[in-house]
Length: 118
Image (cartoon, rainbow, N blue to C red; front, side, top):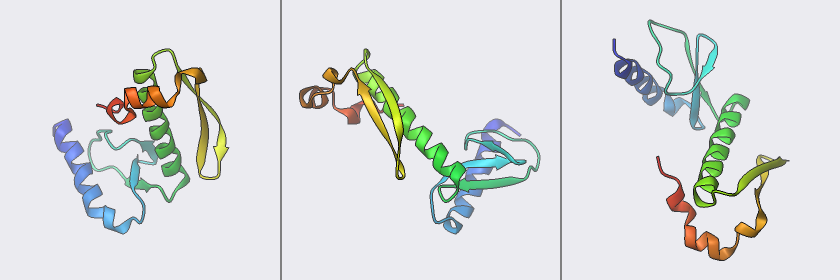
């Protein structure tokens, strides 16, 4: 079986199971090992879909959003960095440093929506 067929099998499973989940699916456990949704697998492993109702699902989502933020900031402001200060309720408090780079003019000029590309 090719990797594409194996991944298609996981996509099929997600499509079958997504209506049973009340929150977005963010990962999968393959034989009790937490993996991302692109991880190939062989044979007939034990699969468990992880959604954002679990602490693992929330951690994965937060890290993914942080990665997008950091990548976007680095693309728009190559000399800047993102500092994660602490968590606040269900979110995180972050700073973009140096602060002088983050001005309304720079944000308009650089357009954050265009920074997120794959």
